[in-house]
Length: 235
View 1: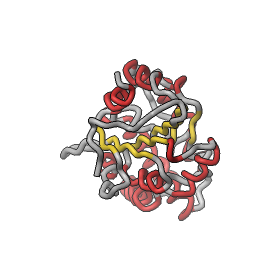
View 2 (view 1 turned 90 degrees about the vertical axis):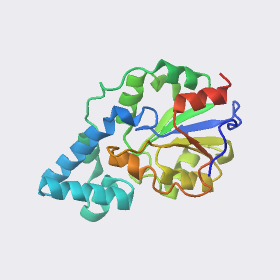
View 3 (view 1 turned 180 degrees about the horizontal axis):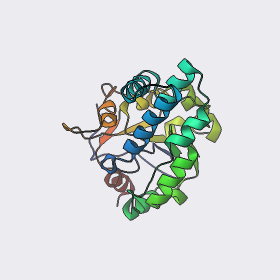
View 4 (view 1 turned 180 degrees about the vertical axis):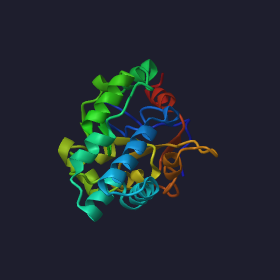
């Protein structure tokens, strides 16, 4: 499935790096997404006049079937997306702390760097700023830039490529959701899966991160982003 980590992708000033945000730029142990999760359920409960359990079921069902809960709400209920996005991403990011090792690793990468997220630009800015790495990124391609269509829809990847005039064969994509790497591979990108840890108490997001992990579309499997970036840099 993956190449040995004694080898890394070749990089130079033409290389483009795409980074997922949540549970990729910071470890899932921070459990930040759990706060978004709670607010999603609360929003659905109020908006659709459901019980808490019914809202939670709908939230997870749409996430699994449509790529994001929002996508399901838009397609099934005709929800206007901005109210939902602003509400669910209004979370406390203080559990995150500056990550100087990540900052150094990103600084040493030659070439352009982008955040590629199913979340909002504001959320990505708040998270990456809290980590102390926002200044390393050339731009953020968020769910609004994708016309509210989430990864892993192939059209979103085409839109991103066209938006930044990216050459897929010179692009490396880092992501914790294995299924989101398939379109990237098919388009010619190098893919790196930050494999979520599984345990009896692992969050559901980590379990879903393993869906679609079988196949040749995952080129590298890693468990620590900073270590891999440092290895790529030869540091």
